[in-house]
Image (cartoon, rainbow, N blue to C red; front, side, top):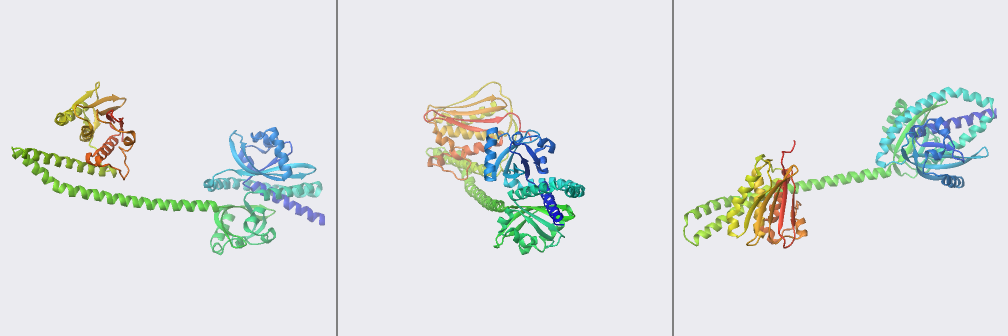
Length: 548
């Protein structure tokens, strides 16, 4: 009678070992001293793509190319001496791909010979854990279904074999040892429960591994026989635990986030992957529990960063809106008194016919026109910053455009004793562009060139075809500019460090506006200069209209 009870007890532990290893999401591989593989669970076969018969004829070195013959001897000695070591390596799949595995290698002595076992899982980023668990849950559902069917078919056959052959008892003793090693070598907490029903106290803890005991602060004896509700906070008793119990019994697997309470009352955020299987007519739950404290901290930090970014964006938008309103108000306030001033200066210039009144009238008119131009540039610049600056594209003859610009600035060139010329290279195609804005760009660039070109100097406007672009250049023989100053010319930042001379000349704002207009056309603008060697601004305009 005692022998029969012992046999049944060993049989139960062996079946529990078999069911546990086959349901585990971790890879489990058994091997001999020479590296030959003697066992692999379903998760290993699915992950590596082999069949059980294929792996049993192979060596660990066949699926782990990083381990040489010498390394294998050292690894075996290390495992044998320490009983258990941590191992990270790349494993070959059936398709010859490589996957990273974090594992625990364990040594046991069985039938006067040494056996080794590897229990591991993929090395994956924390942000992908949920997706991987979902994928594995789907795979494990299929494994559990198949295994449940197999267990029912083999149950009676195994019982008969145990009765007929006493040597089977020793076999299951060894399997029990293996189960314990695999169970306690897991990187995650594992809790096996007896599932009675879906109520809050309907799942009773049947077995736990060492990791679960360390995480919860209980001994194994203190946990076995308790309801799973005892390791959850009271707020989970009324809704979450019964709801998850219903899903587990109905779908046979469930993955959810919850909180575990340690013996000392500390709360630990966890992710629980539970699977339901049948063992000797009993419904059993196999739960892999993962501590997600770091993931929760990362998620919280991310939420705080997003909230901070939202606040900063709102502040920036509010600041931009205030700046735009201020610019519009400023332009309006400046244009209101300027309009009659321009009209009056024009009328005064036409009526006076004696000096110095003629010179004074012309000075007033010229200054008011210059101020109006600067105000218009400021308005265009503000429109460009908020995306309201638009183009009115038409077919433009670049040769005629340059000739008109040269004729317009010729009187100014003569008054400053500067040679103004155009350089047209080859037959130029017409371009699809805003003629008024192109004229504004060229006038701005030539205006800047006049300010820094000395008497008897020269200014040249040239244009040529380069690939599918027309490249315009405005070159002068002025004093040039340092590389440091060139890097800040087209700065689109909200804060500008203008010098007094820049403010007087309008250089910074004019060039920044030119860049906006060129980029609206789909082109690019750049400068080239050295101190004492003149200054050149080059910009490109696509020949064809951009596709919508």
